Length: 158
Image (tube, rainbow, N blue to C red; front, side, top):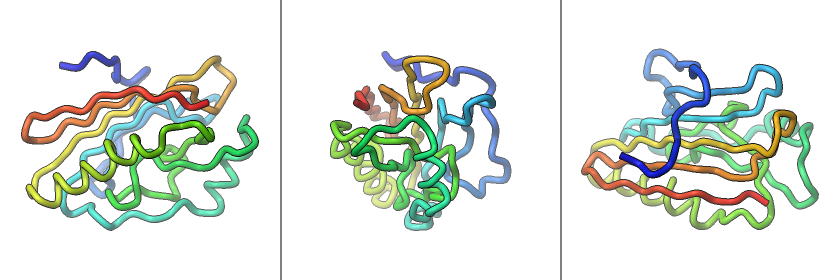
């Protein structure tokens, strides 16, 4: 049980066939912004991802970004995250705690999955100030390791 509401805001799209580390996501049909994502990281996905493509980077910066923003992958390349998927990126503000995010959603997950040979489940919810913006102001996430350990956090994106 988690203290954070990381449930999908509406029925998620399912990525069939187990060919992606990302299993389900919610992308707003009006704005195209990602609002929720779930990934199941298993050993076969480690080191199979791709970097953010130029097309996806341009897509992110078409929205309401700020000077100094950069593109951040939600599920990291090292975990099998797809840099060509618009639902796997968001505009990251300069003061976003990238170090904590990378430690808790990438490094710890990578080493746990690699060392244990089991899996980890990531659920990430992106919160927005209003219905029109495509830049989240906060991320909530829960990482559930197969050994029962859970990491929960919320990070501001300003």
